[in-house]
Length: 132
Image (cartoon, rainbow, N blue to C red; front, top):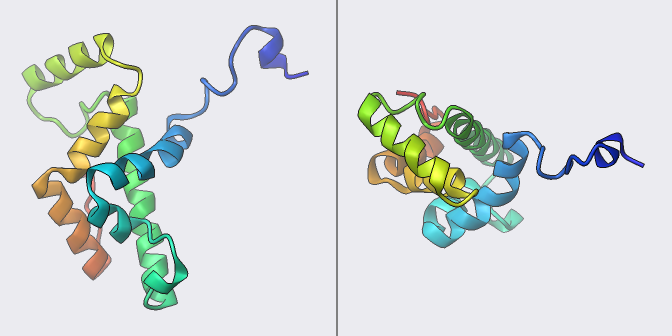
């Protein structure tokens, strides 16, 4: 038996944020922005033009996962410079649905400015997702 189960701790609920992001982000992004999803997470080998392109997409997807995990672990304060906005975000996260941080991560990714940055990064291989 798992020691965590004996202590009454749910091991699934206590996974690192990055693990939850890797599981839940792609389907949510698919629903919110199919084009951005397909650009980051090609689901079929035929969509990959070449191995180099596939590696670039995996690196970009990893950067998106990292940014989303960082946003969630810092409650978005790492990339939102306005302290009043950070306070309102914290209030919403405290009273909102447990998946609210993930939903907010998706909304940040599909925001036109960030979406453009992600798609441009896939074109030139220099992803700036979640950095200033």
